[in-house]
Image (cartoon, rainbow, N blue to C red; front, side, top):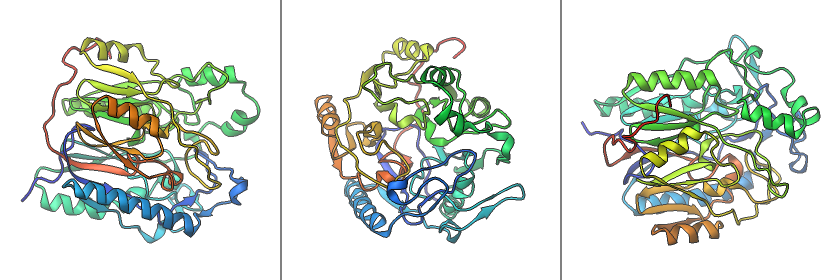
Length: 393
């Protein structure tokens, strides 16, 4: 029986990866955790439905190219099969009904793999509640084939109305000033209450024995506490990190942070890129990196201009820090969205082999290269890259 699940960080040599699919992606129906208003794409607030087929076809073409580039470098790629309930149908629990699901393009969001552990996240959105089931057939096979693989899930949340701040989006759009939004950002107060622990897996960046997890609008304080306790029981260290919003008027705001892979991205031992607009504001994190001789480098600004009328992520029409959302093949090779030429040049000068991947047709489905991948096996063991810890962090 072969070892299949072994992934301790974001950069060791890749041997196996799961990649999502754009089919079945919907503009989700409004729910307490999130809503979309896309009138130019014929989805004004309150409406919902599947992405246009021509967008799905274009995304598939680019994802197939990405798969070919990974396979050419010797790694196994597996694709998710889509369950019928994802296809724009109502889903429910005994406590609520949601009118459709989100999609399965972004497998990073709902599942964390650390070492030989597969850990299903809670998610905080009703439209993503059952998304994990699309990955279960693959994980069931891993369990049978890999005697060391351990598969478990965080407590499945109830997601009643008590888990959300009442009238949050009305207040956000119509009442709160920029100063009030900034204060809420600094206080880690978004649309989630602390009724129950909630967290997304894509808020995590893995550094061997240490994991950095973002406090965001999809990971609340209770979710962070659950993660710290769980990883401590496994002999691992989890650190929270919060990010700021730019003060300059000519930069877009980020009062509503969502997933760490546009803010903090390690590329090899000792080197990590960060978002200069939404820089880390957790002082202990800076101290921890400094004490262990890690270099933190501000990423080059995005260059691609995105133009989409239907989308689940991004700043459209405009440039987006999704540019930082890369995927490493090994410590010397990194896949970057092909239109992000400034970032490609920066990484080339830092000594990386840059693999340009056209992915602008995939990004509207909710994320870029890191979001759509779940690296199952990377060569290497659990290393301690931060032996000099910061007390209390």
